[in-house]
Length: 165
Image (tube, rainbow, N blue to C red):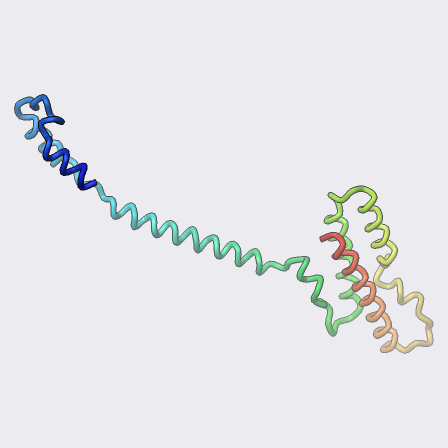
């Protein structure tokens, strides 16, 4: 670049064959004085702030996405630890809805197979198992058996749900 500049300055007569009209330089300098110098640095300063703000927004958006409950990761955690059987029943119903939603794009035969397996273990109501228990069982034992029963059904539903991911 310096070579080009020095070449032009050394050979000005080659680049300016015609002389400028009289007073041209004065008029040009007056016009130049009317306009303020361009503020290049302010543009760059705003560009840096905008870039930082966009990056911060992106990081926050990604963080919020990963903080939301992800159905795939929630499959591996037991949401009803220490709770009653009704919690497991509610989780089974949620998983069945999720399975139906996730299989809507599957081929028809595969979707039917998964839904049939799901329906075979899906209880009709939360009191389904209670009706099958003998009347002689104490309330505490009945609660424990219902919790174990629905917990196993929930684990089976997790297995079926893992086929849809």
